[in-house]
Picture 1 (spheres, rainbow, N blue to C red):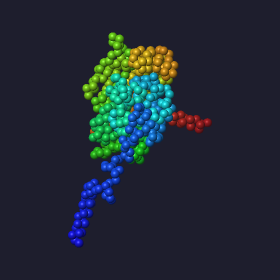
Picture 2 (cartoon, rainbow, N blue to C red):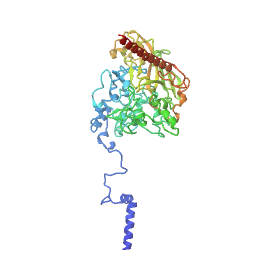
Picture 3 (cartoon, rainbow, N blue to C red):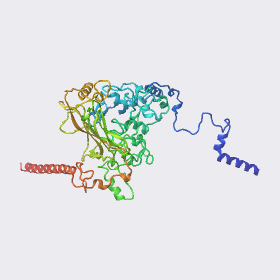
Picture 4 (cartoon, rainbow, N blue to C red):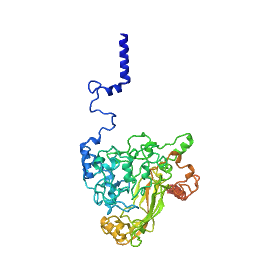
Length: 556
């Protein structure tokens, strides 16, 4: 009996300790067998798209893939078609303006209208060739793969209105990132789809806006595909290893965050925990409005005292265009069109720190200036931008601000915020004093500036296409455009120090309505003092009038 109990004990011990091995080696019948449909390891997702017959193709076009996606994800296209990514239109309730890529002017290529097949190559759809009308109401035209492909080989061609390059690929064709185009395998892309965009999906469009790597935003470049902690502490693998969607959370295919109404303040920051769902993409969404702590409680307290006036980005992004990729800081269109020996030419006068040579003049586009590790432009902002629209009358004797920041020192919801200031010079109707549409792309249309180098033909074609009255007379006007700097956050030890601002000619020297101790009284401080004195005189004058008014009533 004692022997039998020992044998039982040993058997149970083997089962408990080596159960995994016993189960693995057991025959495929009986209580310990593994059903044939079970596999190891267990995957996190509940659907493996490689196993869907409908996604194995072959596919002749992007819309064919989308139609296959919609056989399961029936509401996805409808959700996308209600987003700004699809409409390229944004109704700003704060200003009453209708904004968006399809309607506004910019200081890069000027306008989308008449240049669609080039500009809409980054649209999240297929075949938008006329922005004067909304994108066709066709669910199959939504590009699912541009956001959900994980194969790494899906891309869009730079002149096919959002379509990918397919066999046969045109000679010298380019992708939207400027690489030589290849034939996309649509079936491979369809079977690779993931649940949310990776940084490659977002970056292939957003990092290359304006015609090249980091040309437009300044804080969005290919350096963010695999950045160091210095370049971006949130996206670095050695840092937080965020994807774009970690902050730009989505609901029904609508993503948090907007350059038209930037989330300067999160009204729920004090009650929301990190990682919880939210509809804004501000720093305080995760860090609260009292984020500073550490070994020096007095310093932490003082730093937290700044957050009601200074945006987190102002101190924690001391420079942008980091990581060896420069950004365009100036674009002068007025010099475009010059030829040498009757032929267009270019000059490369700027070398990035990674050794790449960049154009500083092109016959097609004019003169450029570039910058790396650029200190931002600072201004009060409540997050709301007001734009100079195509029919807005301008004063050509002054710099035209294509967009203006709302907010001031008197606004409790405003903060001192960092921006990229893009300096431009672009065409306008010199009789009507409005900015002019230009037709730059269209190799065979006879009017495109990039083919014919004729401003008169380009502007007339652009204005006629947009349906805007044109006098036929044009000039060039200096412009400024502002882009909020919210990416490329450095580690805490690289944040601005106190003397970056609290010093003569410090970073806040020209901010209106604020006095920075230690910095002296700069232009901004003087303006603030004038406003304060005027307000004080108004209060005093009002009091005097009330005093004498009461006396007069008494004597009456």
